[in-house]
Amino acid sequence: MKRLLNIRDATKELNILRALDTYRKPFELLGTYRLIDDGVRPEATVSIRAENGEMHEASTGVGPVDALAGVLKKSLVSIFPFIQNVKLVDYSSRIHDSRSGTAASVEVSIIFTNGSEIWSVSAISENINMASFMALLDGFEYAIQLSGLASPPPPAKPSEPSPQQKKEALNR
Image (cartoon, rainbow, N blue to C red; front, side, top):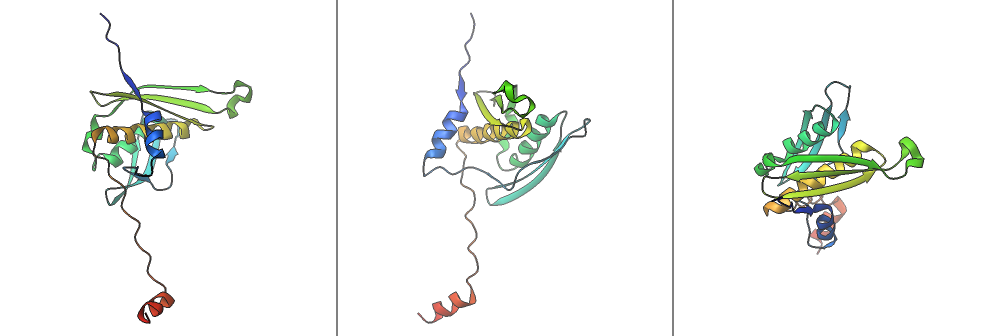
């Protein structure tokens, strides 16, 4: 007898969560990724803030998606150790408007598992690496949501009051 897989639509669930005023991302991307692909061993770098800490990591991979997944996992695993168990099990891409040729928007779909749950994410961009990166971000964010260990990024540090503000505070 065949076993049916229940693959959760993480993109839809995350979009619903993000629409809530109370939702806080478990990590924050600082800037964007950098990807160097020399055709031999691509290298990705990323900076992330989570749990009152900032991480800047680099990772190589057998391809650009592997390098991007590796650097995200490397950045998050010290704070969310269970991320080590998250695996990419399927990856696909397709263009949306074949008339645009190489300038067409690309949709990337990725299926992940943590060993007990299975979920899918998708992202669209005119750049296949960016679409892949956005889908990977969502996949790892959803893994953190599933764990129940999500916490908001640290609050922004208050800026130092100006000399004029200090003077006004003293006169009150």
